[in-house]
Image 1 (cartoon, rainbow, N blue to C red):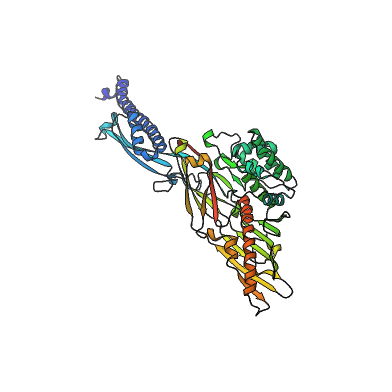
Image 2: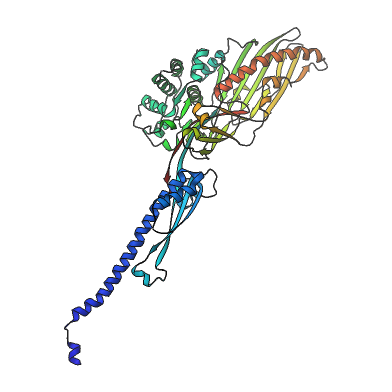
Length: 545
């Protein structure tokens, strides 16, 4: 026995036999682990494809996800769970929480797949002989919309518009009514404009955000509009060129980023937008916005020496404030938190109208104070083709007031303080003094939704949102409710009021179109906001999680 134990013959065979069992066990484990890993990867790929397919057609997300799984021929049963919801690429939110199945503005789909894979050598340890695992994917549509808020140029009083642009540029602007019609009908592609602007300021290699942040002279900013119009041989190019030349005396501004936000395209330096995703902007609206930005918060006096029909003399003072919170005038975005706003403004008009007889002439000072109109993106719906796209905006019209009052004109451009309103001195004679006071406040409504169809977007249609009391915000309504005080006290007001009433009616008939034309060109109107969707892009769905 002792000799047997010391005998080493056959030791290699025994060791090999014992080691082979271990090696075969490891080989079996490797086969099972490899099989599970490969099937896991394969199921993840199917989940990715199913999520992309579901996100591409959200109304039929479940059907599209199931179809994608079936077409990939998984060997066995696959349990599919599909949810649609909102995906917000907010870097401040952990990636796993950026998808919300109950979020508003659905733009994404989440697909979960659960399947089994067979086990081979490990089956001796797992009675079921298979292993279950789950894979998940989230895909979102690329939905971008460009929109702006302002007002339409409905009134074409060439004299008043020339006076306004002359005041904004600091030089003499003389455009005809036909020039204004050409400019009001001219649209330019936003990215073509930014390319022309980069050429003007010698920043061809800069990104769009860098170009918008660069200091620029207003003449160059308007000259870039001219370049785009001339490139397309638009009849408005000569008028825009004259307007650009008239702005050469204005100082440089810190950039146009306060006006234009190109959103996800900001980091690009090449215009890669598809033709169907072009962003259009009205040439005259853009020019006016640039001039407003260049003027800052200074006061502008308009020269209306030519007079207004029905009025003896008219003087106008204009003050334009900043947009609240540096919000843009036009934005390309998929984010509902981006709000575009018009600038706040004050317009003070002082006119005289002949009354004859007892009164001689009547002085009528009118103050128009306009807060910002606001708009934000609510939803973008993508159809099978551009004609079936739609965009929903939410808007809050400009609020403010219209008053017959005297003010301290030196404080007109101080938007940090309210103006003190005093009764307006209408008649100032040695033996007769007549004061008048009237005020109409236009209140703000809650945010209201406006939907733009694919045809609305393609045609560049403008849709208006108005407060419920906007129809009363006219000089005619204001002067029709004037409280009159006559001095010396005790003097009968009957003859004075009888002589005053037709004079105020004459003033109203001339001031209403004048004020409407000026506020239209400024892009601000009391109690109203005009919205325009200038472009929409519905890109293919892409994986986000």
